[in-house]
Image (cartoon, rainbow over all chains, first blue to last red; front, top):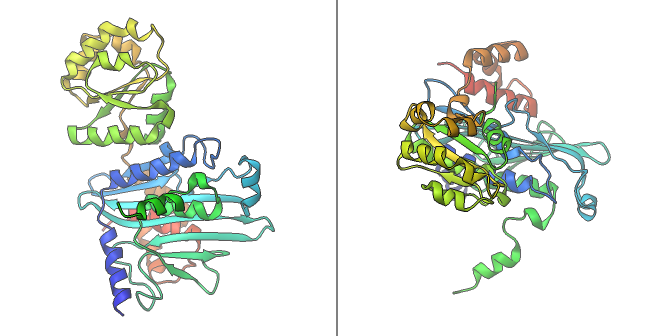
Length: 202
Length: 180
């Protein structure tokens, strides 16, 4: 049981973060994803991570686009060899983050990338950290880890796969989600040569 | 409603090489807004922080993030230096961070007509724009979902609604608007 308990504790510890710092980290990733020649998001994507503060409360949310539906990835304009490597015909990235500003706590994270394959079938990946205090769904911390990732044709398709996710911050989750769809070294934040160099003893 | 980030990015981009004023509610938030601007601008803008107008003017091809120690003095300096910003013409704006209702805004309105017109239309208060209109949001939710947020969340929390992407998004929206 201990590894699952440890993971649950790590997911709880992940929630401790400053909302503005986390949002700026996400904006920097969105900026990378929106700069040519490998831009997959429109140029103003960093600005479209919209802050919404509930008056007279500590709640603040950030959504990619005020309407929460996210942004379409511009896959058709990618350079040729990469375009061939992208298995989706269309895709949309949604980022939903809610914080308690005063407590400096991530209350909920929902980062979804859904799209349509070239054979017109749907595909979706979604990383969920349920609302604080409501993250003990399912039977336990293995089958339904607090921070988990759905992968499938839709989020509701059976079997409902929930992959336990490592305790990564929102910006890294966005990096990971896009890396699954657009496999380019341009977007790889931890390329193996750099990892290898950093693993060398100094 | 204007999106705060879009309004901020728009103010930065509107007048290439111009003067943009970002209004901050307090000093602590000013630091965060500086970081937000740094995260929004294209890498090529090469933003740098400075407290001095002279230093900002020396770098016409970089975005100068002007964070005054003395707001009134910096506004007066800008007022006197507008011509220097035209020769050579700047390719990146000067972004001046001023406190809401502070000395900088007062000086701008009363003693600095040149700086005032230079920044005209390029001023933005992102923190003010970030405030949600909860009544309008709740009305929009109820209209779209057919029930107020609290009522919609009852079957959602009981696991009676499909776990679709649309519903996850709606649940997120409802929980932001939920009232105790």
